[in-house]
Length: 149
Image 1 (cartoon, rainbow, N blue to C red):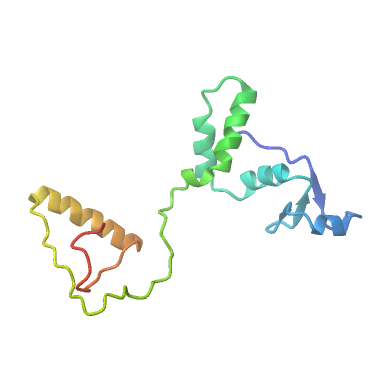
Image 2 (cartoon, helix red, strand yellow):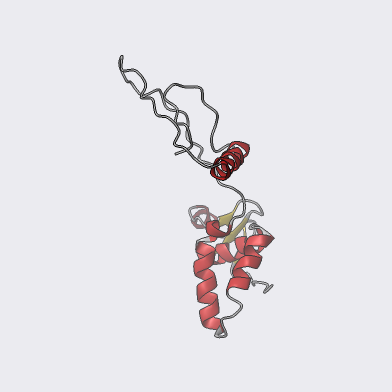
């Protein structure tokens, strides 16, 4: 892959404008370097921080573009949206909320709809995947749904 050049690195120790740099957001907390612009910091992070798989996928996605200027512009857009290329499964990390206040109303009962064995097997496999990833959890509540909604 193409190696990016970091052109505007200003080291913390050698700079006389220390107070001005401390107020900027262009600081890499991992290697303790200041950068003159956010773009330079992003280029640094691309080469040092993000996974090889994301970098490879973005470069492969733009390899067919012949015009270098256009290729770099598209790569910049893809880097800004790099989360789309992240291979790790995402989980919704929301704290559990309190139960819905239903008063004295009994739970609504709904039967499972009839489904073929093949459909039941597909539902079971998908539910197991979600359970393994920690995206859902089993429930014995009378208000629970017969399938993940």
